[in-house]
Length: 337
Image (cartoon, rainbow, N blue to C red; front, top):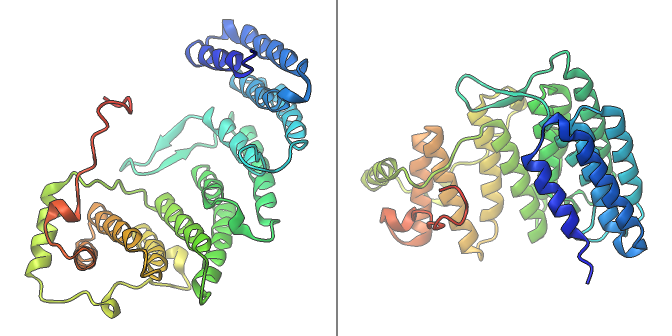
């Protein structure tokens, strides 16, 4: 029996480990041969042809053959348009966003002094790539916003566009896209009875934006800090009743707030949406635990204590190992050692 993806997998592995210029032509020709082989199989292997054509475009991009890369990618787009728009083969609008990320991968990133932010420099050699990246991002974005119900597209894809505009220093487009996402979230928040899917979309969108603004690392392994927060919570006499809980802080000059406060505002909005479903106790516990850890990581102790108190009330316990259990070991299966 023919296994159409075997050849593609072998080529991908070869590409990953052997990237010297001497192998450039050989790798490209190998993909070209594979595409011809799959084309001979007719419609049965049409998906393989489309995916392999994208891989060929990536090879051209990798070796700086820009004209061939874009032409091959456009050929892949036309092939994908022939397929019905049903999962798991729903290529649009993700194909454009993914291609923009492929182009961006070729640029050398730099980190901010505190190591918290990744940026790509618009050097002379990168400017052409930046204009290409923006063109493909806008194509993907325009397809997303043309859909009647924006929440039918995963919030991850909206956030990825914002993230790439941010990474390349395009503040104008970044803010434009961010405002669009927040408008959708506003509508969901103001709805008297948002659906479960709408709440899920808004929480993912808000948390994704918050992470891109202030990417704090959240770890349950800092037991010393956790114990300290719990001790202070137990010593406090103030109850974190629902009416006293932290509320989203909205501002007309929202974009001018400090980064951690902007991120906090978005995360609190997400939390408020999750809290609306009183029946989903598990989701609420996970959300408040995450928020408490986020406050700890951001060095915002008051918020950490408030969220830990809410978490304690939801669970009916005060012990650290129950409130903030350690992540389960993967026994090396993740490959991280």
